[in-house]
Image 1 (cartoon, rainbow, N blue to C red):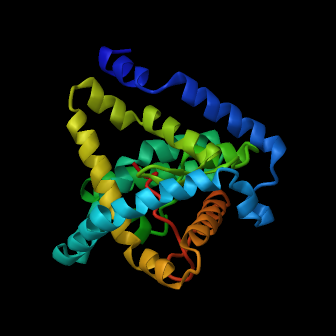
Image 2 (cartoon, one colour):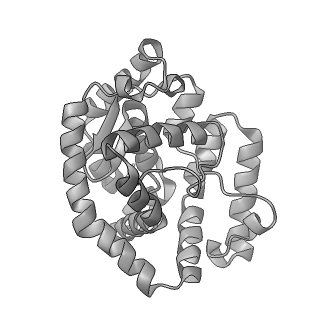
Image 3 (tube, rainbow, N blue to C red):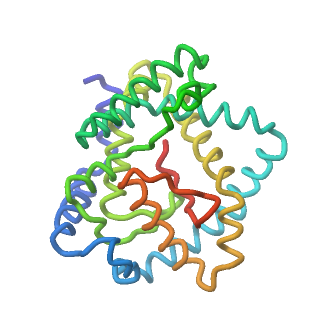
Length: 259
C-alpha cells in the first residue's frame, strides 16, 4: 500500500468506523426496519438531526441550489445528460463490486455489459448505449449490500452537507468511498484534484436532477424535515429491492452518495 493510500485511510477515524459498524449490525436485531413505515421511531436523534438539517438547508439555499439552477440554465440538456452518463460509467467498479457482494449474478452481468458497451461504443460513457439496448442503469452501494445481508437501517442520521442517511448507509458510503478503485488510482498517481473534481461534479449533477422534486417537496410539505425523512426511507427501500425510484411520481431526496 502506497504512502498516499495510507495517508488517506489514516484520516478516517477507526473509532468512528467501528462505531458505525457495530451500530448497524446491532440494529439488525433491535429494529423492525423501514417496512414498518414508522419512520419517526427510527429517529432517536431527531433534535440533533433537525439542527444539522437547518444548517444543510442554509448551505443548500445559499450555495447548492443557485449553482444547480445556474448549471441548468447555461448547460444544454444533452450535455447535462452526457455528464451524468459519464459519471455513472466512472462509478461502474463500485456498482459491480456491490452486485457481486449481493450475489446478484444477473445484475453483475448487466453491469459488466454496460461498462464494456458504454466505454467502447459510448465514447467513454458519455452516451448510454447500453440503456438504448435495453440494459438500464442500476445504482448499487454498500448500504444496499448490507441490507441484502439482513442489516437494518439503524438510527436515522442527517449528515452535515451530505444530507439524509442512516447508521447502515453512512457506513456504506464510507466503505464505497475508500474502496473506490478510481479514487485509489488517483491518489496513487498524486492526482487527487481529479477525484475532488469528480465529487463536485457529482453533487452538482445530482442537485440539478432534483431541483423540481425538492422545490415541490418544500412547497407542499407541512413538515419538510419529516417529509424528507420519509422520502429517504422509501427511496432506499426501492433501491434495495431493485425498484427504480420515480422522481416524477413521488418525492425523492438530495442523496449525494453517488461519489
